[in-house]
Structure formats: structure tokens, C-alpha cells
Image 1: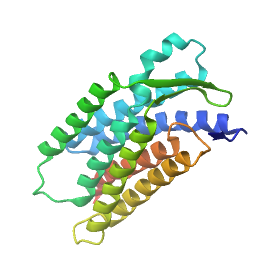
Image 2 (image 1 turned 30 degrees about the vertical axis):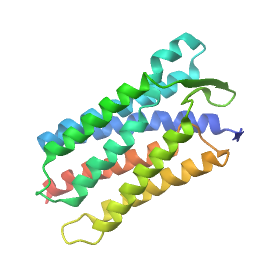
Image 3 (image 1 turned 90 degrees about the vertical axis):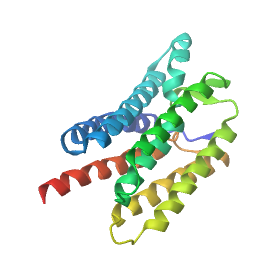
Image 4 (image 1 turned 45 degrees about the vertical axis):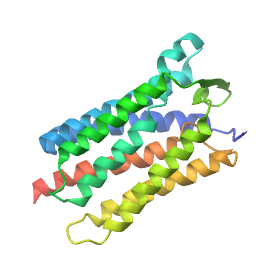
Length: 224
């Protein structure tokens, strides 16, 4: 796979640090403005994202390969956090009270448990790179990436279907479309051997920004 070496290593580190700051801000806003049930799920998602970004930073600076096996669960958890974040944001933007939030909680917990089961069953590749430190990936990464493309495509389709409906936050739905597109494009480029940043970090940034907007919508509503 072709790796673009420039100051990209510094950019990667900066993005990971920025993501940590952003999700901490999301947690604070969720705690202050979000309804109770959404607050609980939002903070849970933030904690998982925080573990991932922290793990990626440790992988970037670590010299001890033994330590890496402890980090694998969190370094790869975007496989679960991307769909859970997308589902939560879709729920917030759709504004349909007929959909029970308890179902959303069950789906989210189910996704995390499913990830937890498979993460200990699947094999991994660990490699050391000049620009980004250690990179952990599933051995059958192509299958996992294909699954993420399917999930992102479903979210994109759902966002397109609700876009423009009367009660829907259309701007939020547009952000969902953008984030889903970023994920699909980033994975396709990776499969083609073009990878500027590892670990789908651009997709991470896109989804975290959608989460920021979704939680900030509660702040806007409270100020009206």
C-alpha cells in the first residue's frame, strides 16, 4: 500500500489530539443540554471514541509491542462507534417521537457487544511505520471495510430519504450524507492503495463533527 510521507505524521498526531478535545466538548454539551436518555448514550459514545483516539496516540508514540495487544480493542472500535454515532445522530435529526429511544439503546448495546465478541475472535496485523508508528488492523480488513461501506451506504440512504421532510433537521441530515460519503470515499481510496492518513482518521473527524452538531442542536433549542 502506498504511504504518503511528509509532515503527515504531525498532521495525524494533531488530528488525534484535536479529536480528543472535540469529544470532551461533546460530553460537556451533552451533559448540560441533552435529554437524559440521549445524554447517557452520547456520553457512552464519547467515552468509546476517547478510548480510540487515546489508543491511536499511544500506538503513534509507543516503542513496546507487548503493550499494543492491550490497545487492540480500543484502536479498532471505530467499527462500532461509527454506526452507533450515525444511528444516534439520525435519531436526533429525524425528530420522530414514534420511534422509541429504548430500541436505539438496544441496537447500540448490541453493536458494541457484537464488536466485543468478534474483536477477540479475529486475527490482527501489527506493523511499524515511519510516519504513524504502530498500525493495528484486522487480517481480513477488506471484509471489515466492506461492512463499513455497507453501513455508511445505509446511513447515507436513510439521510437522503428523510432530507426535506417537515420536522427533520435537514442541515443535520446533510451532514450525515457528507460524513457517510467521506467514509465510503476514504475506504475506497484505501482499497485502491491510496492512503494519506491511517486508521480512517478523516472519517473519525467527520463523524465526531456530526455528533458535535447533533448535540449542539439541543443547546440551540434551549436558547429559543
